[in-house]
Length: 122
Image (cartoon, rainbow, N blue to C red; front, side):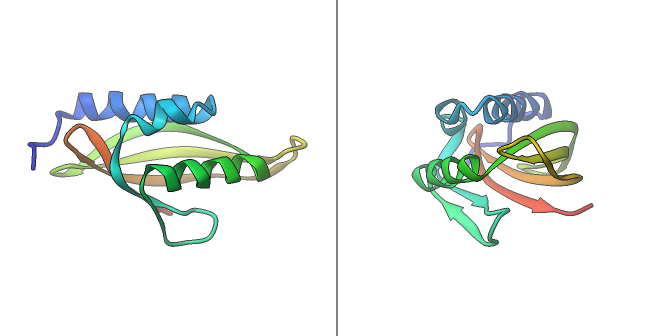
């Protein structure tokens, strides 16, 4: 296992991921992920495993809702883990607000790629 990237590199990696997610540029997000990524399924619970499953999950999600996630703060937790305080705003496809909240995304970074993402309520 490679030594965890310095916090600045982790922040840059995750900032790119959030920007690509908000732009609906799935390919640009997936290149930042480990092939066997474990991604929290915020809609149904559990995890989505692997890049193609993440692609399918987000494509389905974007066909149902219009989420926007803005990172507010990055906080290293321990080796390879970083928590991101996120402002999450979700609209339906007609632009009506479904919910708005602050959540924490906790990432495992391995070999300078996203290996796992978990969602925690503050």
